[in-house]
Length: 93
Image (cartoon, rainbow, N blue to C red; front, side):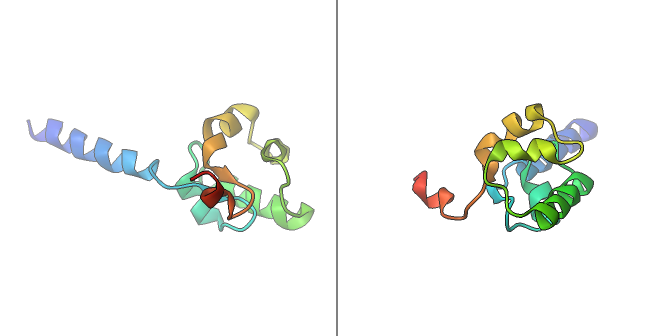
């Protein structure tokens, strides 16, 4: 029973990580990106920030495939969480 409760608590805490809101990949830190997007750890998030700094802002979400280690499947899984401008959050409401 103790293990079961531990598992439930772990699953609840794990699910709250994915509950983070949308993130602007053009302004967010690597930590914010990795906390908000599924399948994007800190190392991939750092690559997103490095790519952005070297090539300028992303103008299309699909440009993220140009970042090493990020494929279309990862982008599709996070499409509703990826912002290119901060005002996109308010325009969806």
